[in-house]
Amino acid sequence: LSVTDPQLQVNVRQNFQHPGQAELTCHSACQLPDDVYYIWYKNGMTHQRQTPKQLWIQVNTEDRYQCAINRYEHIKSPSLYARDVPSVTNNPSGKIM
Image (tube, rainbow, N blue to C red):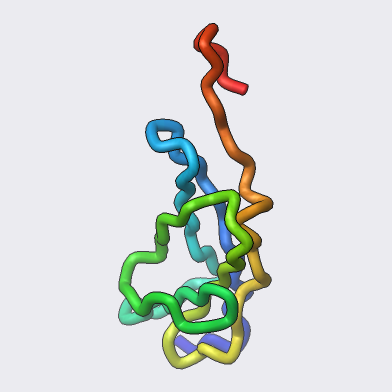
């Protein structure tokens, strides 16, 4: 299998049990080899190299995140800014806002 353009994208999932945190997932539009691992970038610098394609972050910061895969580190996902991740709060009435 040859990967010419992994077309990476960072998807976000809120953590309702821990407000202020979100899970980022590095998603590819094409099939990737089994031995792939993910590289996470924070503010343009290597943050983590890992097998799981998920990363937990604190939201509402000025940090920006990108992902890439090994052997194709020059092809990064578009940046996702932590401040743009929707936040969830719980008001006293119990309604999620």
